[in-house]
Length: 153
Image 1 (cartoon, one colour):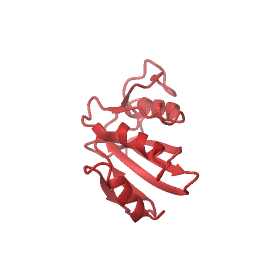
Image 2: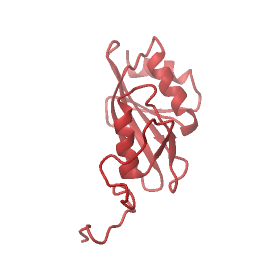
Image 3: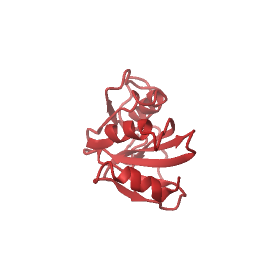
């Protein structure tokens, strides 16, 4: 299925989605946070898309906003999309968990929580994965400062 065909199908589900192809060959979908979980569930379950494989979930600090980039593949239909979402608030970022859709999201979401501070609603075990429980701050945020461990130029 081509990116244009995917865009027509997925775009018919929700009018608030934005589509781009950017530099990559993959269709990029920007989804409002309030529609994230519904879109992701449909991407997996719809017979035309069948995105059964979440192969990457990455936290991103875009400066003013924090968000997530998801890479999804249909192993049966052989197509890939990239889904992007931003949290509404930078200070207390919250997004829906997709763990109930793809179990592989469990540790990816914990890593994002650990390094970016994004909390995932309905995550089964949201706690730090790499850093100690008493660690202060989120080291992959652009505004993170650690005077003891950072090298400043």
